Length: 269
Image (tube, rainbow, N blue to C red; front, top):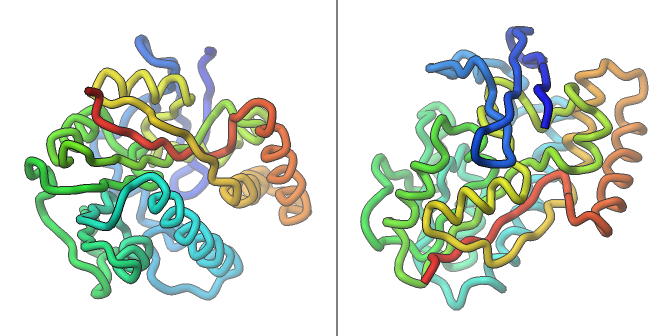
């Protein structure tokens, strides 16, 4: 693994290096800002937006709707029955709201108060012993300064048969290789960690989990490719992104390296 130099394309234009981790097949964003809040303060940062009318926001909302249905169906097949679910990094609460409609008792944890929605219940403290049957973290761990701390606390907060569901970008994917330092999945410095599937599996194992299964988020390949084309200031971003997304998913049929990967974690016995 070699150092990669990336630019914050969204807010500041600052340059950051991705340095290989000493113990895991992963990169760390360097320098690591102690306070990343200013890097989220932008009208185009859509995951914390409640409403919008731009074409990008409408596309994001549509993909989010389909992804939420896919995620809930996945959890349905991985977990017996319904119980208490915590959505860590809940944002505006779109997934938590849909989970609640499906019969889950749902709580959200979201440090950014401005993103809170009245449609779900948020908690200020979440790491309570043996409380949750499922903890989800959809594209959240890459934003944390210490993802191992989250996993250790999740291990404590789960019931004995509980499940953690984590989604992360995958820099081993075809689209990541194609776009290189322009790949939107790096999204420095909002993304502080960048994992390969092996790297995250090793981290999860060190925190007391086993990776029971991995699943793709195929729609992410198209959206991330579109953002990557935007980073490149492409003249034909939609057309090129559609091809890149399709090509990435096609390549992943052989490599299993999708643009985004969902990890199903269980406590190691």
